[in-house]
Length: 436
Ligand code: SAH
Ligand code: SF4
Image (cartoon, rainbow, N blue to C red; front, side, top):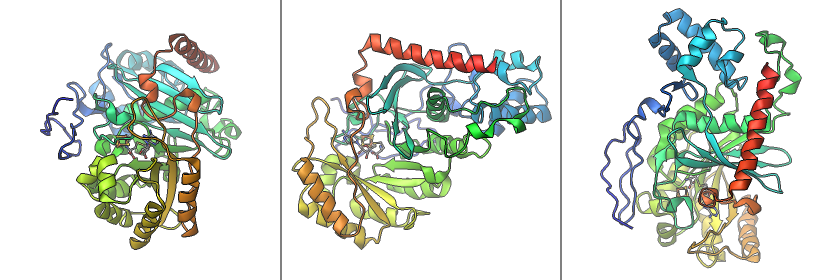
């Protein structure tokens, strides 16, 4: 592979990451035109999805509305966008009829394009999505008995080259915009049929609340564990998650959102302060040598520094523990000694911790194998016996290329893709019909 140009140019408001010595660590740079976090569209219209209310008001004012009107319309549109999941201005019944075409001539409410959707026999659903400028990324929905978790991507590809991770092998990297991040949540709710079915005549107060209660939701949790390193796209991830948490919209509690980082230490405190979600850390190894090899950001921010940042994480407590992810790699990080060392480190830093043991999900050409089930069980028992919860994550959606980054490369099944696209179109048509 050619040497990457590590010069931090044009990163705009993105956090500046230093190159990792000896490793390709290109910076995610905004592409030309990606100014202000909006991906330009071929039709020249502006996508409102992902923009905060004041920015929507600003755009309405720029397009000619007076300040008061612009603010009011922004509030109404925001409600339709995030509370009702509406994608057409024509459905916004409390906005004057004449105003609706004025809006749709200038603006759109976008969704990522669906390239392919897969449904596993265990209920797991996986989508290969595409941005308006043609970049592909993934999203996964994992239903369980008591929750439904959406695994959201923060970047196309990843600049960090963790050796066991398929996403890390992708060369092309671009930060997803807030709209492309929150768009994943919107699309999942579309596909799950999860928007309130209230009367669409502007009498919001009378809508059928029974159809939309916290308990009845299918999508209850979000994990930033899809493609990319969320803390290398901090501003956009923060802005997107603020929209997801906004009480006037999707209103998901911060306690139901988890951000996973490979250990971008300088941004961890800001994550706690400015986003306030649960933290997961991809630890994966307990010695410098092994972590340097498999999670190369460790060469820049070492284990001690990382664990100290975890100990200082705002909001962490015994009620809100930090999750330590640990991928089980045969003969690499899975010995009894490793398990004991893990316990020692977590105790040393007095961390409110739980450990998530992840069986390695192999991909073609991967340099590792998964530990044996007996080894994983033994490792789990050692940690558990020390009083730290250490469940083994059950692999999900194995029949649909489960590991992150795998759908993107395996997207050759055209006839199936066609079928799934039709399914999504049908869902949209039904939604539209419900509005008419
Ligand atoms: N970049 C962030 C979040 C995305 S990766 C991070 O690294 O934390 C989400 C989780 O999946 C991480 O814990 C990552 O280490 C793990 N993962 C990646 N590839 C995997 C594979 N092939 N098998 C098992 N887990 C994997
Ligand atoms: Fe990037 Fe996370 Fe994969 Fe590492 S594990 S390459 S940080 S997505």
